[in-house]
Amino acid sequence: MSPAASRRLRTALRGAHTRSELHAAQRDAAILRLLAARGFVTFRELEATILASPASLRRDLARLHRQGKLVRVHGGARSAQGPPRSLEGVPFHENVVKHAKAKSAIGRAAAALCEPGEAIIIDGGSTTLTMCPHIENLGLQVLTNALNIVNALLAQTRTRITLPAGTVFREQNIVLSPYEDDGIGGFHASKLFMGAASLGPRGAMQVDTLLIQAERRFMKRADRVILLVDSSKFEAPTGHRLCRLDEIDTVITDDRISPAHARMLESAGVKLLVARRP
Image 1 (cartoon, rainbow, N blue to C red):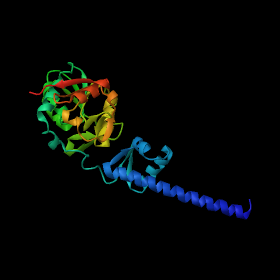
Image 2: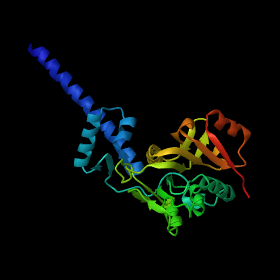
Image 3: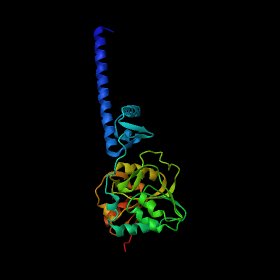
Image 4: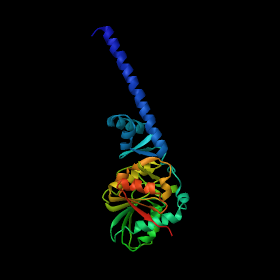
């Protein structure tokens, strides 16, 4: 190789190295932004949101761990500054008093779907909480991530309770983990009862992606998905999609659901149960 060609090659390599460093810096910034927002992030989420190979992302996490900018854990990474203080969305103590009569009727109708002795999942939420007084004599095995639901079930001596491992988010009274290994991998339920921030043609929506990760894992562990939403949720603003309509088996709502929204569910093949308020 001539001296001139050698110089051109060295220049090109230096330019490629600089571009690689800039690209790595952009990836680092994206990773740290995710951690700043939620406190931890899964490797799968990084693969889905950052344009890079899995090998590059692993090197990024290892480098940022060495620099003390994050803590590498199984399945992802957490912030070096600790977990976030709260989730996005309305705090539980504010949400629980909204549409109380409708939620109570929905909870009673949901409990009526439970069979004695079966295993179910009750996701955290102000509407799913209203199921609890009506399942006391069924001898159910309940997996839940909601501390208020645990508290409501503690006095029910025939109800067995299972909690996943994770971080406590006080404002929502919920335990969440971004990692697959949260201690409930062997649990399987006949039914999952869960809520949503809104429901529309695109499906059920949530406001926080960490909630979505936890609820998607619950969905994988249940034969049937039953969504509990009061009629106001059909008019609520949208957010991040939790699931499509065709992933929902049954929707339980109150008697103020509009005919148009009822037709939307029926045309999607979703069973609709309307709970009559007192």
